[in-house]
Length: 205
Length: 386
Image 1 (cartoon, chains in turn orange, cyan):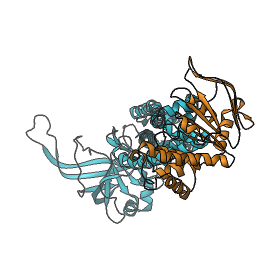
Image 2 (cartoon, rainbow over the protein chains, first blue to last red):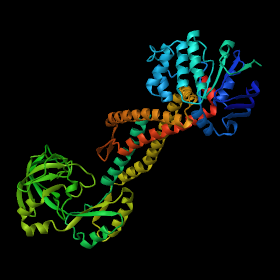
Image 3 (cartoon, rainbow over the protein chains, first blue to last red):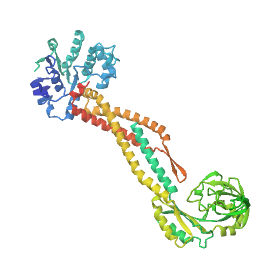
Image 4 (cartoon, chains in turn yellow, red):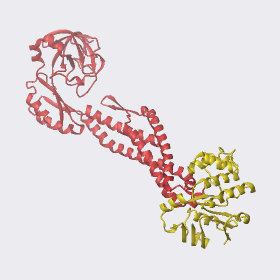
């Protein structure tokens, strides 16, 4: 379960998130829908424990993250959360497969199977500088999906993807909830929110 | 380069320091007691009690008593300087008395001061001698060179023989005054017979005194002088200017070596830290990536530390090779006491090992610093650098 209670977050004088409340239970999926700059990524980073709220309370399961030390948050993030970036973040000097195996520690076969499922069977040994934006995105998604964490948070996972590949990616993401996991993702396209059990529309302040 | 500097620069300092100290303690720590030049065959030879008294002085490491006597050299066709008003040199037979001693044995000239610059050590079977003073003074105080292999008619305690110059001892201004000529003890004993030999070379008329350190030479000399007050025909001398110079070298250069060592260490640490910090700063987003994918900061720190250790060990091995290549060129020559003191740079295991330890320790420090710094910056900011 993820729960936000009156969460506020800003950068300097700019308030990005104000008094946000939400709850996502196990087996559910949440889509944060809104235009660029409305704060979706900020909320996702808070949920992914990559940043801390300025005020309010954030729970991952029964753990009140706002009261935990940095080390405890580290451990919680390590055990509970997988995350994909809006802009795919890959290590440039290793191949697509190695970007997955090196970071997640999963066997190479699992990485190869997942990349093949995402249409990258012929790009397995390519370094990121030889991959297109969409291909990088799929490697990034594959890396997060293969991490055995109960919570998967994806920042605009379908951007830069063609509709066919997008539907495959969404299918893979959604499959996490069928096993009791939690999926939280963001999108600018209302059509991509249809598969979510819960949608929160966000507006730019 | 930093590691090489740390290995080589202090090693140069240590080599210079130990080289100077070693030289100071070997060459600058001798005091000589010898005749004051008022004639030979003093009425009072140095007694065993006086020798024992000098040996008991604090700071005296060893006493070498030497029995010195006369060897007469006869030159049948010696061309001496023309007297005033004469038309040319006078050629005549000339006998010149040279102070002489035997090499080795209880009252002989210490063999550890025999270091030939030419020729060879005389054998017991051949009538040969060593020239211990250069230039070799003759009757007119001309500097007559005595060539190796040149024969001369000589007389020791009335026993005549024809002897050949076999070798030339390296010139030591302090020791050279003790004996002009050095003989093989067995040869002289055979020529003179036991009784005459004992009469000739059994009375101590010179002493070489080894002092433990150069810093004690002056005070020991003063005490020896006091012990020798009953012997007015003797002088107690040491190379005062040499000792002063050596003390100055030791006292003024030791702090310099320490400064060199500290500067090298600080430079090395600074260079390693700056290089590592730049490397970390350029790749901080990688740490952020790994943390975002579930790595703990401790795991990221350990990962980067391993990476830095590989770089450090590689640098260390390269620095060892570079140090080995550079050190032979770090040889220093100094003009001292008429000879050249050469000091080669010797790199000890400590230098190599400490460089490796410093390199690895610095990688650990940089890794921990990186962890602290990146956590302070925050993940969001780190990832924005990608």
